[in-house]
Length: 223
Image (cartoon, helix red, strand yellow):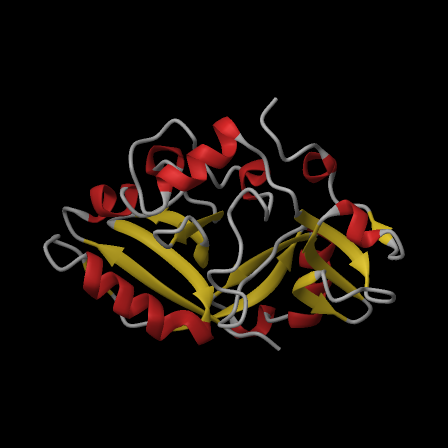
């Protein structure tokens, strides 16, 4: 079972700082959690995040096992910005109206249903093993509104943009049954007998490929 941490980021530079970190444009954030990412300099997702606006800043959720790394990241890149991260606290995976989300109320904790629906809906999450392994486009993050290709610079932006405008991924996110997967298939998340994987289509020839939401079944390449 994966646990998740919640922290806030406040301060007069919080918006400007996150604009230079996140793959999403902070102008598009609102009070509902939006999936997004912070990449490393090679354009690979280091932190998979869910973020929302709060009254005086931003609320941020990530898998707990990456919380210390994330705090270190904020300290490193935010050293000269007027930002204040809070100490991380537990937040609970929950389900609302058939959608995986999060709650501060422990009574709403429903890991199994959250994980099941997240696999079905392409709501991936990264851990220490999968961090820095995939580019946002490979994870279909742009198809979930988590990448903005027209915003200014952010960590890894040059590589992320180059893949979008001048090339296309050879492997990308699929939902599959876990039977008959070969060693070329990279498992992102697994729950019961299903998994989210990043793979080339030809490497799934013997696998049972399951449907994702319609928006996540489109080509990952630029039109």
